[in-house]
Amino acid sequence: MRHKEPTFSIGVEEEYLLVDKETRDLCAEPPESIMEECEKRLRGQVSPEFMRAQIEIGTRVCHSIDGVRQDLARLRGTIVEVTGKHGLAPVAASTHPWARWLDQKHTERERYESLSAEMQAAARRLLICGMHVHVGIEDDELRIDLMNQFSYFLPHLLALSCSSPFWEGEDTGLKSYRLTVFDALPRTGLPERFASFAEYRRHVGVLINAGLIQDATKIWWDMRPSDRYPTLEMRVTDVCTRLDDALTIAALTVCILRMLYRLRCDNRRWRLYSPMLLMENRWRAMRYGFDEGLIDLAKGEIVPTDSLVDELIDIVSRDAEELGCLADVEHARDILDGGTSAHRQLKAYETALAGGASESDAFKAVVDLLIDDTARTE
Image (cartoon, rainbow, N blue to C red):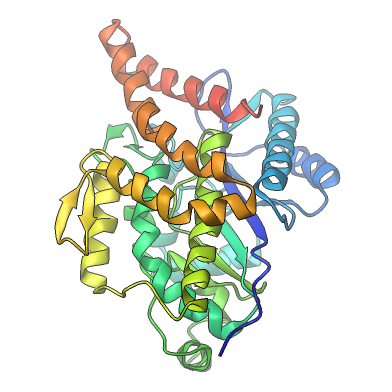
């Protein structure tokens, strides 16, 4: 059965940390007027997050990556402007270099109170930020089928997005430490596989009927069918500090989905691999970013990430041209050349130490880098 072609609309959600520009530490209690002004200016496109030191934005429903660029630049710029009036700045990074979760306060909303009460310290440690990309796939059955196949590419996207090498004043040795924190929650990690949308809903129904969750928004897989919109939601990636990098992640996400749909229309599909093997690549992306390559599961061997990225760009180039975002997809090579946010943070830290800075000042240099890169929207 051939499904009606999806719209492949795009929506991006980003979470930011709010830092004091003088101390570079997190602002545990930002003024309420910040959220009030942001809500007034952004009209439903901004919301508080679990921690008070966080803020979340979401683009409108866009029909091109250029549309995402314009809206995301406007949203970032507004948050920079409003917080700047109070001596604060947003940083688009998945962790802060030294802030301790025990020193933070969570937002006083019923949703967050409930999460904290149920998950206890596993939730209270969520001093992390992510980036989510929604792609319009209106047919229920098609969403499930494409989600099953897309899992293969989740580690590739993670490897290009890493921005969390530090945690509570420690170089963790990982490029994406964020997921080690998030994975402590239930219903996280790679998405389950389902034969149909009805099977997916039956499994969700077991959890709802047992009183464990209220709805499917409490399922936090790396990719999931959205419970609010007719979209597939990619959730595995760290938040990208630079706008151009974020647009590449969004462009690759929509182009991969369009490629998989195109294969389906030709009675072909991407091979499904064992979750064990996919998890190995997920771990490699967390640990190394793109530095040590990923397993090419068709070959059964580790392949340099630049080769895999070249192959991926080639596979989706037709779709990127159709969607008008080939340059954004090809920017993935620039990420490999210049490094992810995690690479740049580590370099700033090591350069400061080599220049005689104290460890404290070296961490402040990292935050300065994050502030500058987040604010660069042109």
